[in-house]
Image 1 (tube, helix red, strand yellow):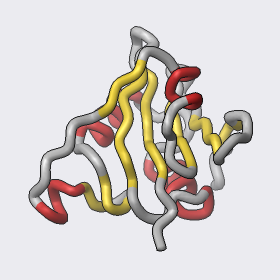
Image 2 (cartoon, helix red, strand yellow; image 1 turned 90 degrees about the vertical axis):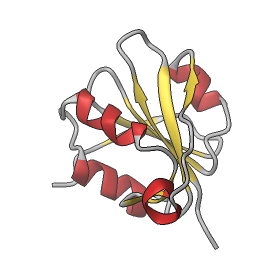
Image 3 (cartoon, one colour; image 1 turned 180 degrees about the horizontal axis):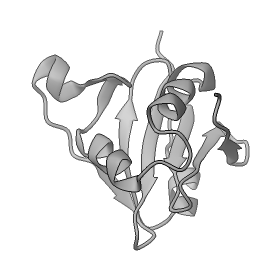
Length: 116
């Protein structure tokens, strides 16, 4: 069974670009992988490029790589709209402050600390 999530980045204009991730969406899975790939303070352009690869089966594999399937990114007007929308079971947002935020279910978003 999968634990679904959305991975997002807050753009300069405040809009949020996101993709779906099918497997391991919990904090010890996708959350840990993201914070290791893009620690807080990372260049936002690196996260944007990652999100532009499209929906993902896992953090490491996009649908394009796995199934040669293109998938458009979702875009919403703000971080609040992202977190209030369908984030699946977990929502991860790399904010314009260069910090990962996470929301699980109906909880409030929390800062995801570097785990190093």
